[in-house]
Amino acid sequence: MCSVRRRTRFAPSPTGFMHIGNLRSALYAWLVAKSHDGDFILRIEDTDRERYVEGATELIYETLAECGLSHDEGPDVGGPCGPYVQSERLSHYRPFAEKLVEEGKAYRCFCTKERLENLAEARESGEGESSFGYDRHCRDLSPEEIQKNLDEGKPYVIRQKMPLEGETTYHDEVYGDITIANKELEDQILLKSDGFPTYNFANVIDDHEMGITHVVRGCEYLSSTPKYNLLYEAFGWEKPVYIHLPLILGTDGKKLSKRHGATSFADLHKEGYLTAAILNYIAFLGWAPGSDTREVFSLEELRGVFDEKHISKAPAVFDYQKLRWMNGEYLKALDDEAFADYIRPYTQAFYEGAELRPEAESMIAEILHSRIESGADLAGMLSFLKAPAEHGSDLYLNKKQKLTPALSRRVLEAVCQACSSLEQWDKSSIYDSLMGLKETLALKTGQVMGPPRLALSGQQVTPGGAVEIMTILGREESLARMQSEIEKLPEAEPEA
Ligand code: GLU
Image (cartoon, rainbow, N blue to C red; front, side, top):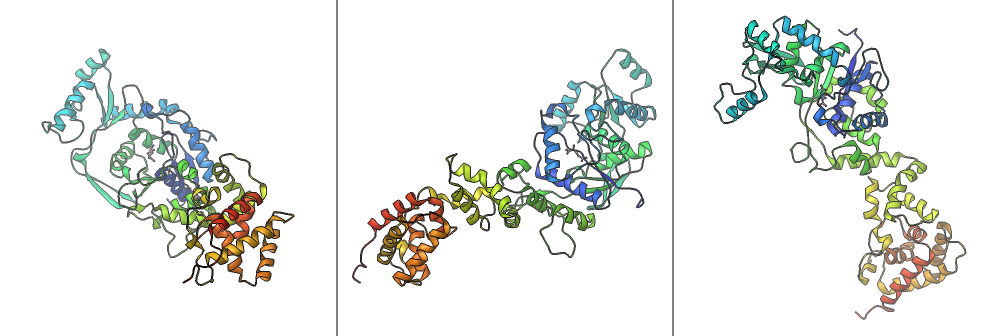
């Protein structure tokens, strides 16, 4: 087996969005193949026509391309095992289903929808003979009965004939040996009356025809896999290696859902998470690189260290705080230009399309670069730029810096005076001017820089200091804000 070139596949149904769990399946399938220089195949599983969503396939192509999970074969790139869209492979399935019928491993079921509905109702109310699934009514029809039904043109489905006794065991690389009693396996439908295969049938035929060596998918398929293996056995085909991936939970231990936050790639993106950070974070949802304690990995680095032996069966917890931290690391690592490009749409949205001076825009990028974990943080962090926060004069009390409201007023007066006559309103001119005041007023740096920063923002903590904030606000707004503060502050300290 080890000399066989690895072939994995990502087999999404075109549902219209790429859930985090799907993206993780794609990433792990890609890594299982690419860590061994194997092939990664994209197959679109669109046999469930009711769930089909227009444009969903394009979204899958776009997301995979955006994430760098390039596929070697697929509907858009072709390949020797095509077509790679199930609805275009319909002619492939019937002959296999008929072969099983001929060999007595499957049978035609003529049960009407009505009968099946009654059966389901009886089962729900506890009257049914069988506690689960189809009651195998057509399993032992005589050849005459079958022929009669066929002659009458009765529609039928083809069902798999499950063994009624014994057990089926298979090995999963993550979950170990899984055993299920055969009597618990429903005689599942392989081919529907409209000729469409069920997912349960199509995935086996396709995985075989496409030479898939490793099946990587979510653990919700663990319990169906014995049925797939019985099909492999019925055809005498070699079974693939199974790698089922653990559940993804929220931090409250419940299955990850929209209640926890964004659950699709597109929504995470919209919230300001970088593709590389999302991918890096998702790589850790159920896997860790052995003894390596690093957490920040590019896709290529993951490819170098990935080993499916380190996939854990314990449910993975999706922690948005951790993702935010990771995103912050990726944002810090961007060069200034890339960060400016990243933050621009958030800045524009903050100013609601109003024109912003280029130096203000680049200053915003400069003060946020090392401080934010997502562009979505911008609006909250910079809200004071729109209007200073509500505050009282005690904002200016700082024992350590020996700052008082009255001293602040004096400083603000001096700053306004010095800055109103500046020729250039830019970072270095403002800085020089404030540092000049420090000398003339014989104050400490904090005593000169503090008051304008507090006056302009109305808050104790700000990203960036007085010089940066003045640069962003511009001369007119800065002077107006400081002037209005001067009027509110006392000229002298009140008598103790
Ligand atoms: N079409 C299935 C899904 O989207 C794929 C399951 C598999 O990988 O076999 O869940």
